[in-house]
Image: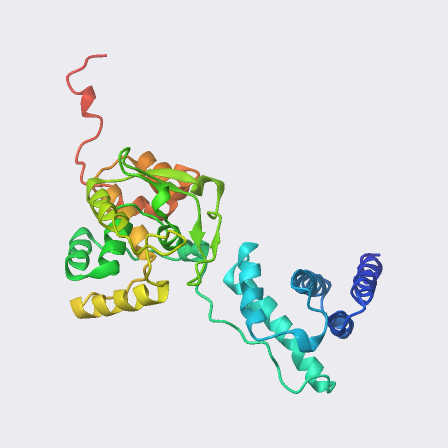
Amino acid sequence: FYELNHHQALNASIKTFESQKNEFAHIIAYILKEKQTLKPKTQQNNQGIARDIMSFLELKNIRALKDFQRQHSTEFVIYLQAKSNASVTIKRKARFFKNLFTYAIELDLLDKNPFFMPKLTQSEQELENEECKPFDLNQMQALIKESSGELKSYLTIAFFTGLRTGELLGLKRDDLDLGEKKAHIKRTLLNDDKTTNSPKTRSSYRTIDLLPIVIKELQSIASKENLNTKGFLFQSSRKKLRSEFYALQERLGIEPRRRLYDTRHSFASVMLSQGEEPMWISRVMLGHSTLTQTFQTYAKYLPKNVSERATFLNGMEF
């Protein structure tokens, strides 16, 4: 019964694609038919990928194979990122898309494959889920002291706000309220062409506190007149900052090498280890929805040097 229903659903999907009356629709329909011997779950996943591809092509008004250009590959990845697809999912869908053209070449419909896979950085969710490798406070101080230009500004703000890389690079002058010592987190920068997206979760929309060291750095940046037309505080690309950051760590002999994203982990671990209020660190600064989320990652950095607990009970009689 299940197999019969699944087969009917597959046929309905194929008919939907064929009814579009364009080359891509027919290629996709043929490939789906060829994959009918795969497990039902895999077939369902393939149909979902096909729907994403068809939605993208419809959005771009691309119907003929010859109308697909190299730059559309990047646009497809950005389209998937905007839908919050993880990097591993994007790669799987891109491979499926690329195989469409391989199939078309085998049918002599094309001479070469126009699809290329843009290099993907991990999503911030994937980075956050990785084991953190924070810097200690002395390393943070050394990195800031020995850096210069926009990297120095980036590290100063990142180390003492806990902002995600995309959130920090997405900051604009209008997001700052230096008088109130606040910054409003409204967006995240997806890539170096200044494409933005909304923050990754509802709790990521937040207003953070600005420490004096951060305010001083932001005042210096915001006073500059050479901000680009979109108003972003940082002009350097993520790639340039990353390259300079790696070179700085090598020069200082810091191992293992950390990522730009580890500045966020460093903020959390240092603040917790210094006894700052966990709720402030979690909800206000990191944008976590619960303290549990924070403690799952950073509990080991909570102070453990208390030799005696509940001292307020000393001397009391019951």
